[in-house]
Each structure stands twice: as structure tokens, then as C-alpha cells.
Amino acid sequence: MGKLLDVENLTLQFDTDEGRITAVDNVSFSLDAGEVMGLVGESGSGKSVTAKSVMKLNAKNAVYGDKTKITLHLEDGPVDIMSLQTSKELQVVRGGAISLIFQEPMASFAPAISIGDQMTEQLQIHTDMNNKQAKELSIEMLDRVGISDASTRFRQFAFELSGGMRQRAMIAMALSTKPKLLIADEPTTALDVTIQAQVIDLMKDLVKDFGMGIIFITHDLGVIVQTADKVAVMYLGRLVEQGPVREVIRTPAHPYTKGLIAALPDLDKLDVPLAAIPGDIPSPLERPPGCVFNTRCSVAIGERCTSEIPMFTKIDDVHQVACHLVEEDLAKPAPKAAKTKPKSKSGGKSK
Image (cartoon, rainbow, N blue to C red; front, side):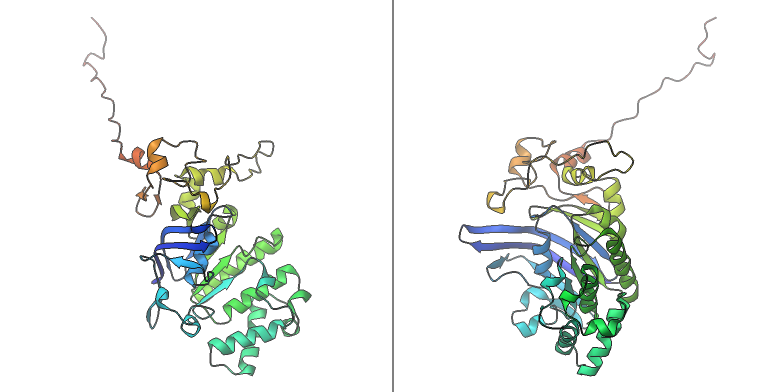
């Protein structure tokens, strides 16, 4: 499948009473149709702000950088998302070609309007369906995501459904317009582990059936391993490592990625204490100069880390990392093989 999304040099700042703060700094990534990308990092890393930028859903005090470019590739041709201004223009990416699943379903559903009325309304906005057609498709999608007795649930309100069922209903609504790109912002965090596993399996099936691309936002690396094809690790508004998910998890290069993986519990070593990353993620108002991770990094190499922003270094064709230490290690010449003395013809024995 071909290219679906290109995000180039995404920089986003917010004008606040305390001045202009940087939330996302020079972020670039791409996504193919039918591909799942995991976007991981601690709370406050800028994951959700990055995802909302793809739909221009950030608050009115958001200021995008001059070099920011976001392109959605559709059958009719590329769409320059940053050039879209009016609500009508933005309909192509807000619920049309792109759908967003929020962490908390109650934030998506109006409590006083039935699930069905909300689903049919959005279909009539984004398609040319009449009310009957929209109702039939909505019930079909509720059934498709595993909601039993879908026609009854269609008439119910969000507060009448369990947490897992609300999450499924939100996924059904997001998918009913058959988007090309699905952004899932922490969609399994509020669910118990059994429902979480069902939602993950459902999303895998949807990628196969619809061929859509998915940006899966989470802080849970375990979920990413099960769902994603590739992963981008984010810290304080910057990408620090990206590549195929299994390669990044098995051979992490950035100290932050290593810290996230080390913090995961090991079921084979339950008595071993968890290895937390020391310190806390800084406030965007106190953004450190140089590498944004230098205030918590145990292997920082001095002045270069505290003054110079690291650029991406390729570990191989698909795995790259932004770290001065890795860059310097890769630049070192490979050690020469030790020379061995040739054996004497007599086998080394003296006469």
C-alpha cells in the first residue's frame, strides 16, 4: 500500500499568560496505508498534541511553525492540512478521512443524546446518506465491533453502557465514515485487561478489513508490541527514537527508550524492584537547552548534551535515534582484528 500521511517539521507552541511555550518541536514521521504506528512516551511528552495537529484540533492559542507541513494522501490527490482554514474545509479531515478515538468515551458522546442519534448525525454530515441508510450502517458497525443486540444499544445513551461497551461504540462511530486514518489516543487505558485484549484484537482486524492507517498513542509499551508495526518514542515534544517496533524494543538505542523498557515489570523476576527513570519530565516552561532528556540522563556526555540539540542518526536503514552518545559511538572506527602469529612448520616444538 502507498503513503498515507507525511508530517514534516511539526512545531507547535501555545500562547499563554506566562508566555509562548513549546509543546512539539520539529517532529517528522510518515505512515503508510494499512500500517500501525505507536507513539509512546510519558504523560506530558506531547503525544496527544501531535495527534490533534494532524486534524488541526488544538486550541485557538496554538501557533504552528512556519516550516510545519502535514500532507494526507487520498485517492483524489494530496491534501495540505495546514492550508485548511474554515470548518467546512476541515470536514475532510475531521471525521471524514481521519477519525479520532479519545481515551475517555464520555468525552466523545453527548450524555443527553442517544448513541444512535449521534452516529447518524455524523454520517449525514460527512456522507450523502439519508436517515434510514445512516441508521442501518450505524447498527451494522455496532454489531461489527462486537456489541450484542446492536439495535437496542443504538437507542441507548452513553451512561447506560459499560466502559468497555462505550469504548466499542466510540470505535464504531469513528469507523462508520470509513476513514483512511484512525488516531487512537490511549484507547485501552481505562479498560480492564480482558476488554483491553479484545479492543486490540478488534483494531488488528479493522486494519486488515479496511486497510486504514492507525496512529496508536499510549504509554504502555506492552500494548505497542502487540499492535504496532513501527514505533516513535517521544519526550518533551521531541522524537528521540523511531523504527520497527520489534527492533526498537529488542535493541533500544536512546537512554530514554531503555529507561521505559527497564521500567516494565518482568513476570519471571517478581522480586526484582522496578527500575524507574530518575526525576520527572520538566515543564514546557522550563524546557532544558540541548538534548531535552539531559536532566534525567545517566549517560550524558557533558557540555554537548546540555547545549546542542541532537539530530537523528541512522543505526540502519529503518532505525534511527537522536542521541549524541550513540552518534559518537557509531562514528568510532571499528576495532581492528588482532593479528595472530603463523604457526611454525615444526608445530612449535624445539629439536
